[in-house]
Image (cartoon, rainbow, N blue to C red; front, side):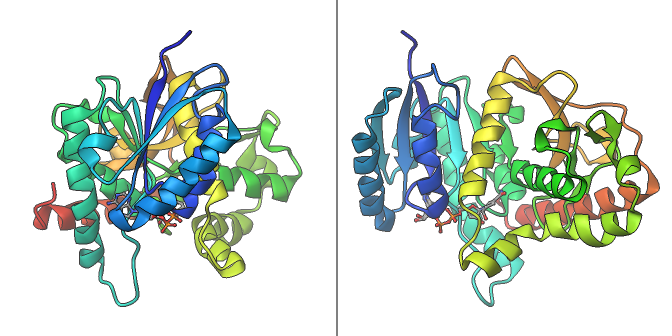
Length: 328
Ligand code: NAX
């Protein structure tokens, strides 16, 4: 029998939390043979709802679920954590400036980073989902100097999956036969979904589609603004798709990318592709044995270069803003 993996989920009582926890407990995070213990972190107002969710988890009698703890103290919730999904964040409310938003999130991600530093297991892997995800990951990372910096990642897998969905819809090629799509930059409306290296049933995607107008005016904005379109249609932000992408992100990180394919993850830059070192920016990555590598040597055309640079510039500005606030 395997030792259970401790999975900490913050914002557990939120809508993504509700879509996420049952699938973690049924083996979709780490695999159908890996027992898990859940550690739920909420703010005091969220504790009661988290307890309700925990009751339902018990009622599912998941064979892999070996325990659920609930706390409003990050030092307790991250104790022994092997995987941390940082979902809870402070949303932007009406009239809020970017500085206010970054500062409010600093109040969440700085103490959580410190608690991870002090209490998490040595093999901790962190995925930040809560927005602004890339910069929140940077804040948590800065507060955790003893944790290897590459363990802090942010989620662009939902954007990646959205790009697969749109490409499949346009071409009729099933998502299972679409490879090497890349999301570059920030998880925001400036992100750049790149199909120049992608393959549709073995053929270059950009050549197969051969429609630069569709690319520039339809595909890219549809992927980048999909979150807003979901809110408009559903009256609530993406939840099940976000949860599904979070499971994909961690599962790929732990279990590896398929031969001949890659995924998109926002990870600390090593300077690849001109992205300033240390920024947590989305790249094409391959994974194996629980670690990832940024795919090297891709040719970046003019069309892509401008768009990557614009999104990276936004990350540079976010980093400057949190630096000025003393958050990193
Ligand atoms: P909800 O508002 O439904 O849930 C958030 C939960 O977090 C609440 O229960 C709240 O009490 C809790 N929370 C707040 N501060 C906390 C703290 N300091 N410690 C622990 N828990 C805390 O939001 P939901 O729809 O679940 O979305 C969560 C986050 O994901 C948001 O920031 C959202 O913007 C972000 N998203 C990120 C995506 C991505 O692709 N990276 C896509 C989906 C989503 O929009």
